[in-house]
Length: 274
Ligand SMILES: C[S@@+](CC[C@H](N)C(=O)[O-])C[C@H]1O[C@@H](n2cnc3c(N)ncnc32)[C@H](O)[C@@H]1O
Image (cartoon, rainbow, N blue to C red; front, side):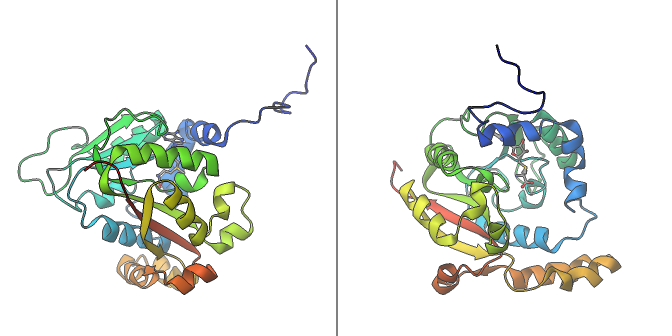
């Protein structure tokens, strides 16, 4: 067999991008520094994180049934969302990486995977390790599926596979909610997912049995620099207030002109059984 220099990688059959995403987060060091490096810890102050939470809380506010978060990572969204919706309906978090799930369990605290006291006002959380492309649930089990920093990294064929799997798991009218990159990141994006415009997103979701009902811009108006003085002073409240100004439903013109620097799409499953 001909020898190839070490580190040159396979000559043919390049690694499937979904496998790369899986492998990257198996490293304990990557998992343990994930929140700290991105300002996702409870003590951190991040305008972008606050806008994501504001958009997600609004998108989930009407969801009365079980919620699934695919690729939950360290649980940074779940810990800020589990008080949204009825406290007798679970929030299930799935990830393929044990190190990420370990961080999630630590950050979610004692009630994770345990029965909650009757008086609890938050959803019970269940974590499990599985591959998001083949999830171990019966059909139509969830009322909403959240997939942040995951779906947007997938190539178009893999996104279609993911939409199909999510479609299977959602009840009719159930919601798929995920984030996407805006024009700035797209301009220098190397991954295929980076090049997704709101219009392209609409088209591919419609082809996969979803109707986008809301597309929020999450980083389109204020320069992140505005939050710097508050961050320096350790003041979270003004940053949250700036976050409220940042989350805005995109108008058809905004979508057409691709004005947002980042966004969240909320798509409803159409068709299928009740
Ligand atoms: C960039 S992190 C995002 C984590 C979290 N959603 C967030 O917003 O911070 C990507 C996550 O996707 C998970 N992941 C990658 N491929 C996966 C797959 N096939 N099935 C389930 N999880 C996967 C990784 O383990 C990692 O936790």
